[in-house]
Length: 170
Image (cartoon, rainbow, N blue to C red; front, side, top):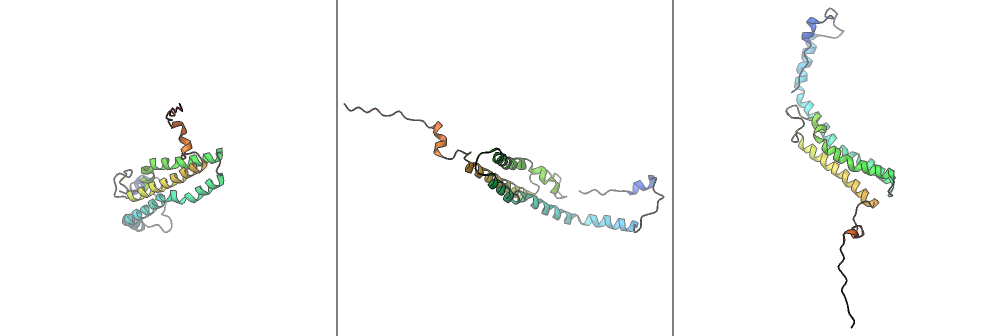
């Protein structure tokens, strides 16, 4: 629910009330703009929804730049490449944890609780999927750097050996 500021109460107690009005200022113009502002609430909600979609796909928009940074960091395990991979792996978790706060500013004026998960559900699902895509790119880079245990040789410490069978030739 939008609240309009009421300045008429300030006019009677103001020490500046004897000043002339600025050029082009009329009281009728002010009343018309207040009425017009009340009728633009649906247009304002549509703009908020468009901005919410922009925020929802923003992680996917940043993927090309992050992929270029991963390419430029190389395939070795150095401090620079590890920093980029850490950033790429931690940012989706931070974004998903703060999803309700991020979308609260885009909640429609008809919603009472702007931070509820049911507010803008489509945009939030797309936002989560785009962040999971970013996480997948980070995990792919970890695999290509050899940081993820994907081969059978990575699990040799957990293999158990059976005792060798005893053979007797006599």
